Image 1 (tube, helix red, strand yellow):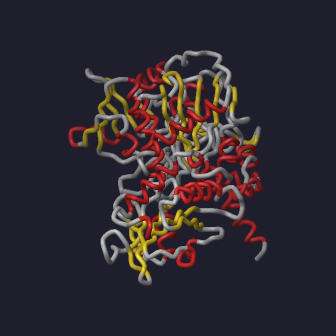
Image 2: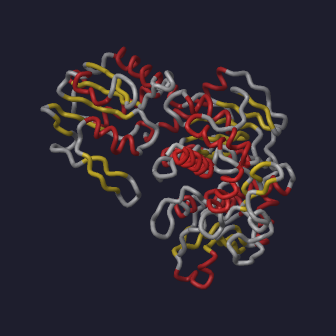
Image 3: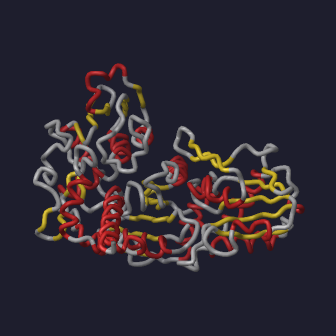
Length: 494
């Protein structure tokens, strides 16, 4: 592997506003790559979670940036959504003194066959491949013919090795369908490997149900769905006299970190990229952090300098710090920010419901920055860009008109509908602590003066706090705009 100690890596996942485990594999693989010290910086970004695709580059200081889609196949997201949201012009984009390299999705990597075979052996260690059917299960869609291409290719490669008696493919939304597994396979043992990035609703509930397994509709403490009852015999389910073995999504395998690094290596072999304008990374974000620590607050978090470093805690806990639970790693902030005090998932990190009862002791400003990027993704980089007067603020109308697919209809939101939606959806007391800089359209404010004032503390505590700036409407608001338009259309037809 080439020396990439001056480069940054961004892993792009789908994420979810409902399932807290959707982004877990992407973070897991990023953590492993960070541990190996291959890149100077490693970040994650998501379509449905934070950091969003629109803001993640503001977190990056390196001038040489690799973008790796943590997706199984090429399709709508890798060909349309990700390039659009990141403003990419192709495999190589030069913008804002950065050289951005857009890699293929991880599902295209030749080593995926190793992961699939390894997972199959793990699922059914005592099953003879010569008497077993291996069923690779993908999503598929009739909207994009390339969606099933990655799974189909892996099936062909495994079949050519003649390890299993038969190797088949099946999909949720296109033929051959998962529900037809009895016809597709003939062996007494059937090993089913979900060709998905993360364990979510599909792998926990939909696929087991389509396979004929008994669904157990309850969730574990982490929010995970518990997919099916314990099998009659450890390791498998007996369905119509045949033994069915079922495992977790392939994207959760620890070996995926190696696949991601292989994907980056393959990009460099296949592309001749110009050198970044500067070989050195930009000056660290220290100025913005120093400013933040001087003010001592951002969102619901207060920051104090101590004799050994820095202390972060919830603003409501100042008088109860001795009873708070102690944490000492920047990465602990990610888990602290996932759920509110009642255990509900927090897809919007700017929501005024950060849990209380914790203290985070950190040694230096670099750790403070990492922690704050977990608590409030890209807040420091966005504040820095704002101070430097090069923050790109995008009107709501432009954001809505950029949408495609199922969200394209959001572009039909009227100005009157937006004027009612935005203040209700983004209000600081109940929804989001961000300071909104964008307008509905040029000359038409989206919110009142206080909500748009970077000097106003959105918590209502009247502190001199660093603001969490919102330069563009988030995907949750876009989804709300879509719902508003659809509801209006339904009313018009009744």
